[in-house]
Amino acid sequence: MTDLHDARLTIDLDALAANHAALQARAGDAEVAPAVKANAYGLGAARVADRLWAEGVRSFYVARLAEGVALRAALGDREAAIYVLDGATPGAGDALEGARLTPVLNSLPQIEAWNAQARAGRLKAALHLDTGMNRLGLRPEELKVLLGATDRLKRLDLELVISHLACADVPDHPMNTRQLERFSEAVAQLPNARKSFANSAGLFLGEAYRFDQARPGISLYGGGPEGRPHPEIRAVATVEAPILQVRVVPRGETVGYGATWTAPDTTRIAIVGAGYADGVPRASHPKGQVWFDGARRQMLGRVSMDLMAVDVTDCDAARPGAMVELLGSNMPIDDAATAAGTTAYELLTNIAPRARRIYR
Ligand SMILES: *Cc1c(COP(=O)(O)O)cnc(C)c1O
Image (cartoon, rainbow, N blue to C red; front, side):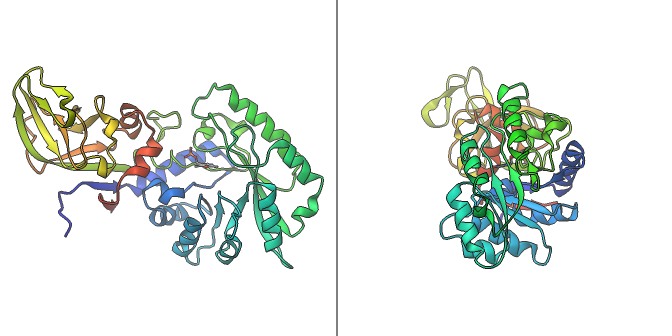
């Protein structure tokens, strides 16, 4: 049985569509190919992809093979391109081919494996070039090897070349222009493939970063490109949890595990039914805030597994059953993340399955 007052995650699909439109405007003529990896950053890949398809999206990115297989099934006869960032991992060939997934090939052995998978026929492929992040992708000297022996690609239709920015959320970071230069140089040698470079933040760095396709994730889901709220980006996820009890803490008493907070004066607190098992970072203490009854209110003491305490002194509306906003348009995800020393990415992907999901 689900209690209507349990913690809930409301996903505003109209806000998702509005964010898509804002990012498409930033992308100009380039295609917007959303990252829906990690279950669309925790918001539900099938529902998110469904709405984005309705908004005109025809290409998606996932990280894992299993995510791609699930997305292909969810899309049914809607024939989108699905790119798998892990690429052609050992043993994945038949499953990739079976679900018509396009691996983003990350290394010379992956290129060899996928070319071999094509046997007599042909397969589509994307290629990841590393331009400085040192995560996935071919190094410049490996690209040279590939270009010197293009029969490695002879059964592949190399549709797309991508690279990924390491510091796009810091607009004046010198890595951005350095990576842009390296990418531009590399793709000049692969004139027949489309080019994909920008993530969400990359789309805010200027037209030079657009190329043919962008791959935004976080800003579709409500995170600002620079790790703080941005006027063009709307909140998509709203997390609310109920007040279970209101109590008065006399001056000098403490609240919660470790007795880390001591009441400087008589304080009214609300005990809220959400904790780190619901995705509220334990590190929210001591800076974390929630929104209730028209104002931001301080979290007090440590967040526990299922519960946390909030200062509601001078707030008459606090009573059992009233809902507190932990994330949403009044409590921006970037601000909540900063208070907890983390990012909107981690907050979103940590919202626990225990929270009831409602799509609007
Ligand atoms: C996750 C990811 C993205 C999306 O990045 P955001 O910062 O969420 O916009 C794009 N490209 C690659 C390679 C990724 O791993």
